[in-house]
Image (cartoon, rainbow, N blue to C red; front, side, top):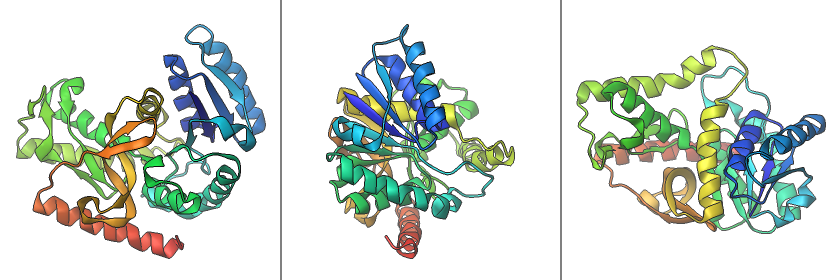
Length: 303
């Protein structure tokens, strides 16, 4: 199993590649980036480090070298800057994603794409349109929303993170919808009250603005790497693991022509099936509103 990483010199690409490399389930990781000196530095350093941890090989690559990859991770973007909303990255990163798709289509077979370039939901739809591949091959990474929901619930309730389950759906950003009614602890209802929900909502709603207020020029590399690696492993091992991913919808929740985060089963062919939790009427209304907002942006962007 081979993984290509477009944007391999950057924080998300390099941290995700390294974490996946430590697990040993990949034969090769191919790093692609316009910053040739930095990506070659990663190849030398990462390849050396992995010798004591796994047999995964790390190589420097061009687009033509990705033809035999079983999946491609896209993390390419312009440098991070202080923003109030991930949608502000749209016009910056449009100039990057279009040539990325052109190069993938010219050099690669139809394979699984994991997209982590923000705004993820918009670009996930755009990548699907530009490549023309099966929608289930195009997976948008927005697992941090579900991760932070469980993390915040653990902080508020004092219950172990590993035993809390549940999902956030919708947009990776301000249109995130936390499904509190479906959250569990050790398989039973989490047992959180209204005050707990308000506190969890406050933590998850304010995290991005607090993080960006630091003006570090850095994205959430470590957290993202943990969750991107979950996706990579699910594809590489054909595990069928259920994860929150942005997917182009064709009738799920009554929505079409938009990509939004929903729980899906992930395996070697990409999205294997949809595991849609039942929504309350209020949650469905909110999801419809988010979908309409995303569609307007898609139309304005010319996709």
